Length: 592
Image (cartoon, rainbow, N blue to C red; front, side, top):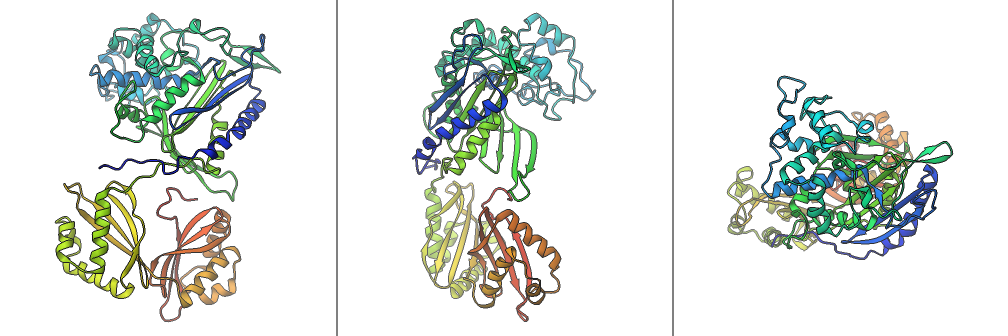
């Protein structure tokens, strides 16, 4: 049976306990930015678990904002357009790698910036790779463009900032063209196709492109700052550019959409229940086009914040060193600002709408997620160990304790013995067992995926980590087996390791001169030790990962702000430190 990641601890008490603090974060944001009104919601485990509103919908009526207030969500509309394109693709009515001109005749004679430019494809429009320039100020005022106007724009040519498929650049015009593709392929206006194909199946009864269909008593009027006052920014009418940013919705409605996107994870055998297949929803949430890689520190002694970000289909997707993999999008128009962020691995998402020009609430949402992380409320799913891995673990542990050539050959691929012949493997295991003794117990298997992982064999004189990778054979056979052996630190090596950890905080130049080999540059080491102390705080010796315990070792150091691995070696004759280095732990995705 294929292993499906699952939550081991479904308790959400720490999430619930954080709700008042998250509301306070949004209130502070509204005060600092002088925002008339804001509504927000938190989804978890397939439900809207908390929502709230603050401020006012309108300055004249002073009606209070509630989760049921209707806001325009600007560019958060784009993923609905992308989802409709995938729905048509899944129905066999278009292909993502087709030229867009196959579905929009006005693009047939589009002049390209270079003679070797290939025609723009549907995929490039979805991923902001068509080569069109970022057009937020201009496009924000084109929501109500007529079909005739947009056709004239396309026939007249489009200015390029880059040749197609060369770089990411955010294009509202590109999503306007996707709206036209939906209309032409579906045979009905894209608004109607999305209404029937997405809103209705998800129960989004309060979501619309047409402001005239919004109950005036629930509409949050848009505003801009006008000195110390707010000035109205009445929403534009619906039109051809609505596909890039025209939707009106509520927190409960948009929560249903967030829940569907999150429900695409993890892949599993359940029946399909959404407007598109779960695999297509995951496809939307894949970073198909790189946007940026960035690192920064809030203060010189703070850990590095690292993020790698790309664009999927109407969604920004990426990984960072704080919350891991996330899916997000913001939106801004005259009168409105909005943002949402989903954490597929934890099943949690947060969304917020405002009625102030470009007042996107990405910062308070990120602050809320940081709060949840610190409260240990962002617990990801864990992967169960596949039975085939457990069988391999048992067999290899038995082979370690009692060599059996036939058993190892039955367990492994033909290629397994090419890098280490059978006799050499026998000697390796024999020498390990002579040095470390018989395995008395094993740790739980730690899978990396369905066909790879590791466990530790606890032996009389130390521990041995066994790492395996299975091949794509039926049945899966072991193609890689690696042992990492570690003995406890002893004697001079232990004393030296403890002194080095102390020196990371309090440098001792006299000790360094006496105990470090001349090949090591003490000035460079002192700077490195100072940096370690700044970034990790006070460090303590942790478990030994690898080494003989007497002359060399790789040891985990546990700090106030993370962990680091130290590799140390002593000269066998002088017992002076001949090698010392530090690296990130292998299980960490980022360097602090």
